[in-house]
Image 1 (cartoon, rainbow, N blue to C red):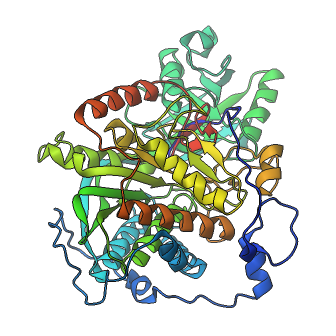
Image 2: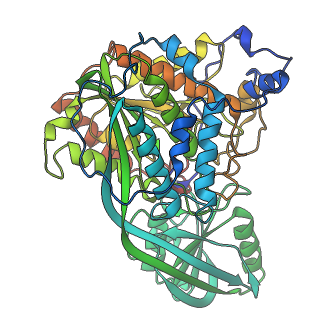
Image 3: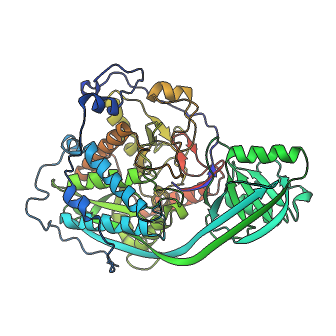
Length: 564
């Protein structure tokens, strides 16, 4: 997920706790109200992957030199005999989802990262390998028309060095920040640096030290430069978490880096004892690079009434991104491969988005390509009946979050039909005796582009760097006072950073909704031009509010986080 800001404390308007459990969850007693699937698997001595999709997984090999630039027209028939012939039902598709297949896909993403400098970030070999593998895997099924959509965006990366009071301080780059080398004194910025009045006169010619929170990193960096600061340091407002993210685009910034909360507090303490000199160096690369979305649409089904689902394929530079958002990528892929056995009434389209961590660039580019902004047929967007977004669905210390489509928890609803999507996800968990919590539509993940185009939207989210509450620990197990994903945007977001039980359960929930909408649009009205215009105006207004980065169930990563 994109990070532009950081977390704040929110009071959620509602929490559901359903009673009862499905018998197959039991293997041993558990103290949590959610019996973890991993406990069951341990009791059963699960020994090895079944690799039911091994022929597709094996396609991971070399990245091809040629790419399809335009989407093929749906043919209406799968290329392979026997594909797409069975009768579809939510129950049938749920049964197709296996943990082995999810973990095999996650391991493939880990391999791509391992072979390419430890990450799958936009502009690098790990991400290119990921998109090529997705393309080839889906193409081979014969069930989907698949294409790679190229788009060119500004790529930025950097090496950074920071010393203060003669000691090295670990720091992270904020993408789109400029290069520069400065040596000056550290000056504490009042409040959170979101207003120009927060910057004391003595910050001019010095390095501003700013807490994450409330407004975007870009606002803080811009205000610091306007106040005359020659550099800016933004420190986290949650413990034990590095701070990396994006400024969201080019701007008038001084060199800027991010620190952990602990490092920031240490510098504040030193400033309190006297003048602290610091040296800040940012050596940034800035160049245009081609990136790709992978789009696939079932050959079967009504192509004027399309369900779309997806997640982003890139990681941050710090790590492989196996939960963020490898989990959403693989959950979507495994569901898509399982779907190839079944007949469809409504077409299903997949969107694997590039450059989300740079500001949701791929998904916004795609919507512009089908709504007339970039030319072409502006009526294509009207064929999308709903969009489902899956960004982080296997966080280790998870909650089961569902986007607040009806707006009753956070007073920001999606377009008409989003309430039905939310309710259908809720029913899935409640029928299994499982709790769930609402997640804010903070506009910090790829669904934002769809909301702005008036398309009913929903999805799942298990949490990022926000700390789990006591209430949530009682509902879902895990540790209160610890991040929902302690490895968010870090090197340790690897194959070991997945809650297997949440991963399986949430992908089964994806399968349930995909099957439901592939058969019927009951309860979800078709968007019209008027509704799309109103939704766009509402979303643009909300996007101007300083309420967070990517969402965490009830909380944005904003109020102090970068976007992702």
